Image (cartoon, rainbow, N blue to C red):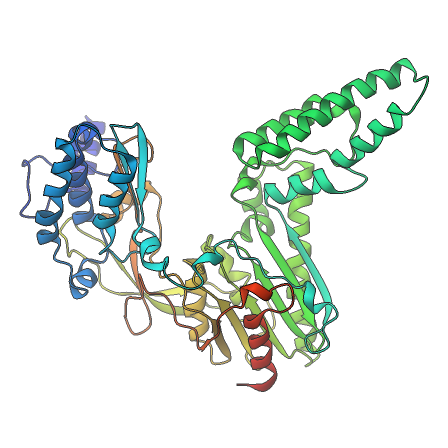
Amino acid sequence: MKNRIMILGALMLTLGITSCHKDSDVVLNYAYNDEMAFNKAKDSYAEKFKVFWHGMNSTYSLWDYEKECGLDWDEYYNVMLPKFEKLDELGGVSDEDLEKLMEEMVAPLHDGHLSVEFYNHKTGSFVRAEPSMLRNMSRPDFALMSFTPNLKPYVNNTKYKLKDWKETNTYASAQLYYVMNTPGIGYQWAVAKQKELSSKENPTEMEATTLAYLNSFIKNMAILQIEGVSDKSIQMYNNLVSMYSFLNVPFLEPINPELVEGGIDIKYALFEDNIAYLYISDFSLTTYLNDLYFEKYFSGSKHDTEVATRVKDVYNAWFGAIQRLHKQKQLKGVVIDLRSNGGGIVYDSNYVLGSLAPQGGIQYGYARFKRGAGRYDYSPFMPQSASTMADEHEIIDDVPITILINCWSVSMSETTSLCAKQLPNARLIGTRSWGGLCALTGQEEFTVNYTGHIGVKRQTPVYVYLPMVAIHDMNKKVLEGYGVEPDIEVSLDAKHLDEYDTQLERALDYIRTGN
């Protein structure tokens, strides 16, 4: 009986139909794989749209903002539903046709994280549409999704010369490249050993056996290289590591599959006039720097520990340089590079901008939660802050801090940017950020805030990935779908990155001159 009461309570909390468009009076739960909510959508495009519309109607956090932007959600239903009904009348619907209509469906919405997937029951594929992609793809720096800054031109640069530089990359792709292409280890060691044994006129039985296994190992590694990097190929590689461990190939270690997507690229540099620079590809520092997080996300193997140690070494070089130089009153300024940083762990704020600011956090705006199933059932505005380092550290408030951002600076990168706006000595440099500031959640929080994921990814015929809370800036303004403006706008000359970095150099010039 207790379980039945809990289930009924969950259903009531996730009421999905609160408008004039009702198919029935039944309370539906769009949070999970609920048969009543998703059954009709299994083989009907119109029913998929209805699930999307009703689910969004009770869970989306920005309806008042969308209304200000000119979207009438009820009229939108009347306009879009007939278009999906026409798809149902067709004998076959391609993924391209469905995607085109789905893009029209999501185009008016502004949430920067919002992603919608419909199962195309005619093809067996999942089709995806994201309004933020449609909105940003015309921007000049949209092509910089995989951008990584290049510090090599500054090793011997007379104006912007480096005097210290460390970097590491923990992505599975970088690890595989290293083991495939570095002389004296991995694949290259095996090739050299193969050549050595092949040249012997009278090899011993052991040498002949070793050569045979080397031939097989090299062949399999060559195939793996052609496959590219994926969860599957990393598993294949790890199988080879185990299978040929008896060959004692130097640095042939398993790669954590989590690092296919969950790695980090981190760079530290100290310029000659004591400007400390940090680049991180995404906010996942906590998983390397915090022991509890490391134990949670990694296996704790020797190799994983070595990978984490390299990240710690780079971060500590940056943080240590700032602490030392500031105490000596020699620190000229700080550059934090968040270009093409897609966000990540909120707690990372302690290690990045929060490691330069006073204890107690930085308020960057206000949060507003969805606290009822009605379209406009929102909580009051609540102050929203990013945490700062609790341990004793130097407060960098007397020298310039610059934050580099671009089109692909998303989520936690934008939160950090808003925090920088609150520091009198910090400036944003680059181009406008993505426009995805609203905070994300796991599905388990759906019943608390009347929001979260709609459906279950790759299980229900409709799946919507959306935030749990709307974020506003200090003026209670919504920046979703637009982004954070830089204080100093500078475009990147991507064609000449082997020679110079226009945005980085502008940050260095600002620190040196104050303008």
